[in-house]
Length: 468
Image (cartoon, rainbow, N blue to C red; front, side, top):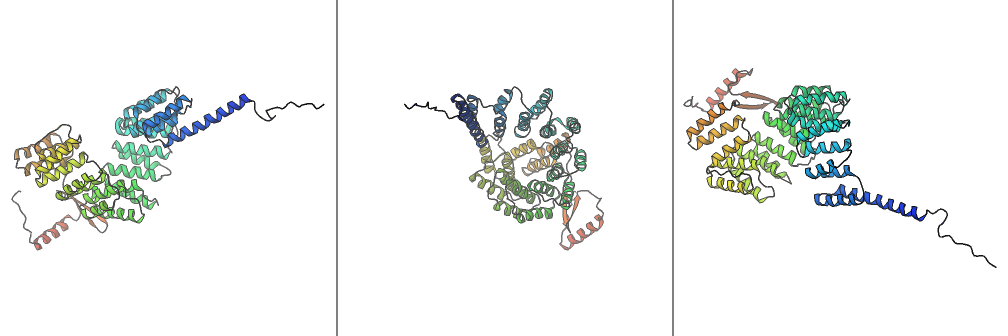
């Protein structure tokens, strides 16, 4: 009689059913986690991110740092604050993500410093990323006193050799106007990369140390570094201030030779430089060659035209801009109104006023006279800029309003604004010679004046001394 053998449905090497279910659930959870994190990485919309967040909560997937980083990228301060405040024990990464958002994205510098002190109170150790964002806040609001305290902490934590920390220190000191301290940090760096060179050149350029910016740029080239977009834009800013058209053209050639993308950042800087140096033909060439033009690009060329007496061209450009995608901003309106004032185009000026008001750029300010609106906008932008008072005085003079013209001169003195002396540059043999009105310090001044007088006589020029 045959005996039946009991058949086992589980092979000896198989897992029990309970363990198998657990393993399946674990694999499913891991797969879901990977999918959700991948979706976070690709997400470009706040509402979709909130749906992903909901799924993470439902499925108990605690990955707040990934989520927080994406929220900052999407620039939602309220949402980021909510997620961060719900963290029971935020680590240094979470703090750095929020510090980056507050300093670089939302420009909430006071909150950035406040969060740093909270980090310290929890006993967390600040790292190189922490100080990078902290110095941005110090440079914009808190000033160099707090910045120097932070600088001491950098030495204490042994981060004084970190290039990105030093880059932030240079930028902070430059923004605070302490170029000596910025240069000291730069000079004491053992191994300077392009980031550090850019920080120092940019600081010089933005703080009106144009000669120093160009001199350092030349040193950088001698050290074998090749400039990038940031370098070139800073150098172009210095070229504007010095009227160094020769170096500006070299930058233009360099961009073409290296086949660099002529984006808004570099293209607008080139247009601005050519405009400030009075070369509107080259400015037009760069403008026309740019495949994508944003409002900064349009403003650069409109401003160049308006400031070089090509008011008609500025107005034509504004009309073309309206037909393109970029929406005019406040800078556009000021330059176009200035062009209208120069041409006496009152009707067009009123239309520009209406156009600005419809787009919320007027803040319910209504004036009947275009010239007065230009003056108002000039002084709103830079109350301490002597050039704005001079232009305002000339606008009143063109309108035959002599009393208001005189009042502008009085207002200049009352506000403690001193007029910047007239200045001109001559580029001879790759060297820029600078001359100021009333300046008698140039070592070849006597020879230059003699040659100019002889040249004027040959041209038949008779000086007009009626206004002296």
